[in-house]
Amino acid sequence: MFVVESPIGLLGVVVEGDVVVGVSFAAAGPASAVTHPAVEQLAAYFAGELTDFSVPVEMRGGSAFERAVWAEIARIPYGEMMTYGAIATALGDPGAARAVGTACNHNPVPVIVPCHRVVGAGGKMVGFGGGLERKRKLLELEARVSLTRAWG
Image (cartoon, rainbow, N blue to C red; front, side):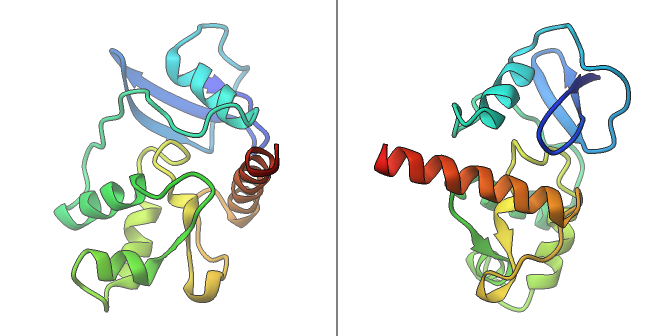
């Protein structure tokens, strides 16, 4: 596991071969001196220099529904948000907003697969495995970078 310092605390990045298989918010220990593309891309993301991750990711585990939710989340553009209900509707089950929330909570690769971009109805900030303060910081980072790029 690589440990990465970030504005939202230490992140543990699990890499097998060249594929990212996990990101966790409960990392401990000093930041890794070893360089890996995932670590470099996360640093660039937090510096506001990267808006699309290209590091290979393998989403392990999860039910077919969870994998479908994760795939839908991965398509949410940088700096934008989508509601749990909109994702449920996009997957053909408008009543499954809570199940979408559960799937987001089980996302094995948060930040890279941006479950922080999923919000409650009306844009309400609800639920995030890393805590609402981290979610807020991630959304603020993306909004700030998006505004800077638009008004540059």
